[in-house]
Length: 179
Image (spheres, rainbow, N blue to C red):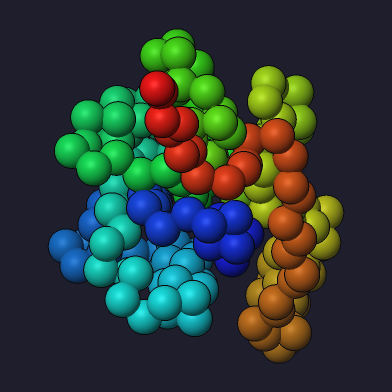
């Protein structure tokens, strides 16, 4: 997701994560892995860019996505792209941007994570990272069955994820000069 946003040319970015700020809370493994992946992509693009990224933290809800979008829009040097750690947050962000008349992706790119069904039903459709939900469920069930049986399971399993590019992402907004 972050590679995609950077390849489009965005350099003023906001990352919206769920939960509290990592340095003041016990953070989930998933959040920490996603943040590490975002930072890795930023460093690979330009090691200096990571310091200019704005981080926002909230509950994974549409209402908090709306609230965070309001905070992002009121930032003095607002970003051209928002990378949300969940589609639920991204849907709230998109809703707020649309209500404020912000053109997505013309003025702001929004990218989510999860590829929930609503992601392809909204306008513009959300660019997001798709996870193999059925496989996640199967592995979770296998782990539970192994725990119940007292046997070792497969341990840590990494499943493939795929970026689904839709209508909410585009190059950074560049205002044209009026003469």
